[in-house]
Image (cartoon, rainbow, N blue to C red; front, top):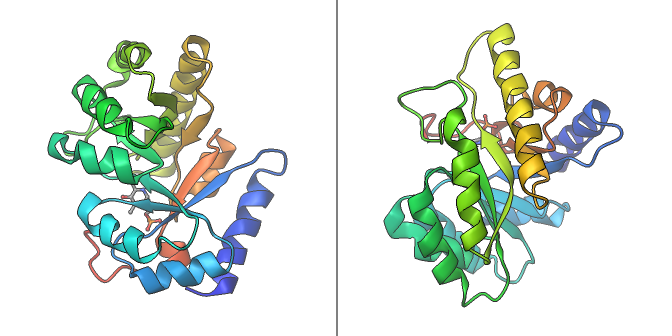
Length: 223
Ligand SMILES: *Cc1c(COP(=O)(O)O)cnc(C)c1O
């Protein structure tokens, strides 16, 4: 990672969204605490991690910095305690069953956990995420959990050709607008990664998750 990589992404984001505030989540899975620290020294505060365990050790090493941590990977039920206590946001909630444990374990933190519902927008078998038809029902469950603040939606569209990807972003935008009618706390639409974040912003994203374009290619392409 270099300072110029961060500056380049920041300027591409502001060019794509001159009138909106877009949050850049730096996706730091597989990166070392030292790499994260370097990016933080250049002003990046928000980081996204896929694996709870991997993130906890890095968070401990970086606890002198005031960073905001997002869990963006699939959340297993048996990781709810760590997720609720160590992260500021969980961007990948996709089933009602996670809400009670997240709410219960958040009590020790003393302020609400920000939550995004992950939507399986292209109906892929391989991908986690709530089905679009079940979104509003899942969102209603949040009313029972005061320590969970529903902030919006996250999606990872299927790697497809451009028209199809745009279609997925547009369907997400519609779901987001619909969800906003039901919950006043909803303000965040997280979509777009290294190779399509400008396109996502053009279709309404105000949070993008960028890894490779900031840190360079990951050693393990599957991670
Ligand atoms: C890895 C990952 C990203 C970042 O992907 P890049 O192509 O490296 O920018 C974004 N979101 C999620 C959920 C990821 O797992």
